[in-house]
Amino acid sequence: MPMPQNSPHNKPVHSVRLGQIQGAIWKQTGKNNSVFFSVTICRSYKDGNEYKNSDFFNVGDLANVAKISEICLNWIMLEEEGQ
Image 1: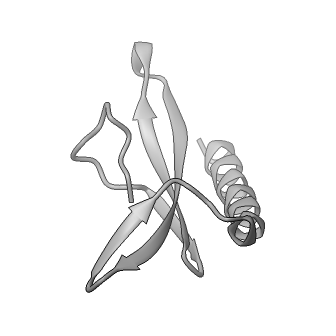
Image 2: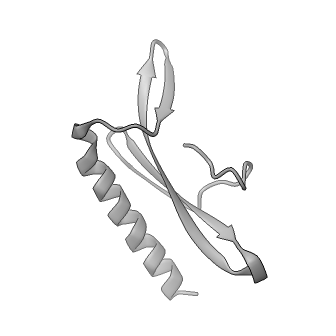
């Protein structure tokens, strides 16, 4: 799962997988210690014996990309309600 460039050693606070599509939610700290979330979405595939990730999606992937986006949005909204 690709990581946001400004946090190369952080782990996602939540992740979701549907088939080959993965979503990761990252907790970020902004100015004045404000907290916000960002999301990365990628597709896993096998190249020979090695597994790799891509941020390019086929038409058949888009339904799962949309579902992952909705799941991540719902998770973030619930998390922000609890703060």
